[in-house]
Length: 391
Ligand SMILES: *Cc1c(COP(=O)(O)O)cnc(C)c1O
Image (tube, rainbow, N blue to C red; front, side):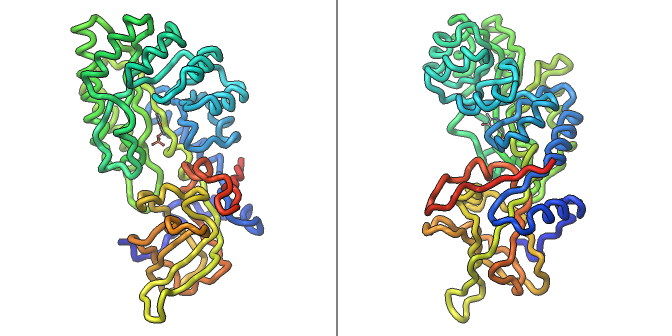
């Protein structure tokens, strides 16, 4: 349990915070400010740490146009999940060869749309979807998503719903070939905000088994391994830095595949954007449920429905900074809507200064990913969470 208040310098250089705060001062809350310089640095760090990998940015993490443009110009490709995301990316002048259709759940008419636009790289994990791909995206490259362990060590798991077992993956890739598709590779996602690097070891080991079986049993040589996302943002729970992740993951790759590495794809979302954003909110109400209650409730103008849905189950614990100083008291933090699910943190009581007052601003660090894109459009009439991007 955290019993200290959040310090700026643990998350941002003072000048970065001051720049964002100066921009935010006087603007009506709530909103997210993205510092694109941080996105640029995160992308540069990632490509430095994984020099041989191709990066497909997971658009859903933050589809802000300025972010997409920056990544386009930096050379990134894009992992796209819907026709709407595809339209947005293509409208920015990105070639369809730099897009993959990474969603395993898709309508036939959407497959046709992607194919007509020139996309030739598709994820799948089910026979029915594979047959649709053969019919509507003839000759395309397909990669099969496999199930991975690690949901108990990821703060925002992405397993169970996606992927298939090893045996099924082998069968699907063999069938892909029969159906005239190109059995291109495998993908996995170890779970978002995966804090156990060992999760990649297990997943890569599984992938290697499938590569070998297809080679031996079917004469099929897969060319690509897509390692998905899972690299961390900087929240209250500590993680290793990106260099450590990269070193370990590449060691696992070499242990299993030797020097004969397949093409490696990464699909980062959170790790590129999370640290680049600060959400600014305002305290609307502070109360106690009884005169003798040992903790206060702080209600703020951002909540579960306006971008902070990753607080569901208190999964992601954002660092919350306030300018107030002095003694701290355990606090329950809740959003502004008429829904009792709109409680952000109750089990984990945030220590906030007793001096905190209605009207004060809260600065939610590392909110650049999975916030604005998750915000509802008008629950209780509140507008979607606004975003500003600084160059
Ligand atoms: C959401 C998603 C990602 C991004 O995951 P992060 O943990 O945010 O990096 C990557 N690949 C796929 C298929 C996804 O659905």
